[in-house]
Length: 449
Image 1: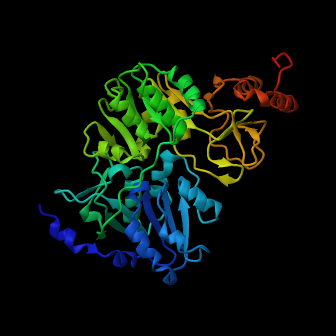
Image 2: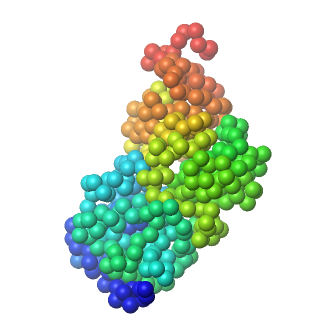
Image 3: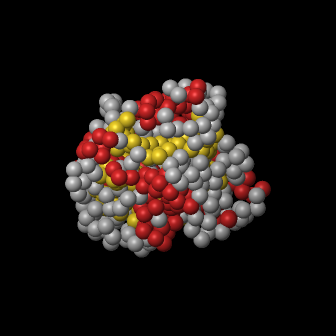
């Protein structure tokens, strides 16, 4: 069947597509590189015609014109499921609100509770079967589209000629028969997320993690310099036959693949396939994803579900955090009340790794940091009292790693956790932490001082 006539009948200019948005609507833009820049610009140009338009998106790397044009938020209210560096700056200015979530549940939020009046997503060109791949941005795309269909909303696709078509396991495309409008136009090259260079401390932490891995491990890496440092160290290690199962595909996976470490042969499910939810990195990473039969995208509700993760033997999850308190509570999304990123899939992978055969979930951080005034501050707090958001409860924090070592907190008493965490702290902060633990009655007098 030839779908070109239907495609042509649904073609609209960005301005025409933006016209479907009404005051009071909920508008969903896609994750990251699925962000529709042409429609965003056209919608921003309608600012004076609209009020109370609510926009949802996340991990956007380029400026959002609907936000930039409306610094008083009289017309557009922008909200993010997980903040990029750009969106963090918007939060600092009061121009972005975070949407608390557990990542594996975001699709069910859309299917059970949310309303989408207009869903807009950038996708690669249509194939001969009338299908549009969600490319490297599948994550929660299908659930968002289904929500729009269910609630009588409109679906607009923006054709980005730079996005690679990507093979998928499920919920990886939309058919033209489900689409209301199609927008075409030139796009800049895809934004790239630079990999931060690994520091000496990063490499120390990475070594503790890599030393706890085995051949055939299936790896999940979070975002940031620390997980990338682990990936780069794996690429130089003797490990072999590793697998990919991750919400976010980053450059370190390509490094490991080029080093011959990634085969996916020993995976107990999705054997021979590297599974991911979305991708962010360099253009070379995006090129690797293009129509690659060894890389498949799945929705986050599959990738991040503990029932999926626990079926993967030797699963290893590697993520960052900002701080931990002496009770073992882990904060990975805020510094006090200042929002930094989001929950993402950290709690999903902690849960799934724990339930699997020989699964391990590592939360990594530097023991201390230097503030703007040049003061050395501990990332291990006596307790969270400044509004820090607890991402992982003390009952689900397991392997914690700093440059001073690694500790498994599972099943430990409050005094054991305190002692183990203080041993991971920078030595200059340990006496103060011991004094705090004594005051909080979580320190045994027999513990070493």
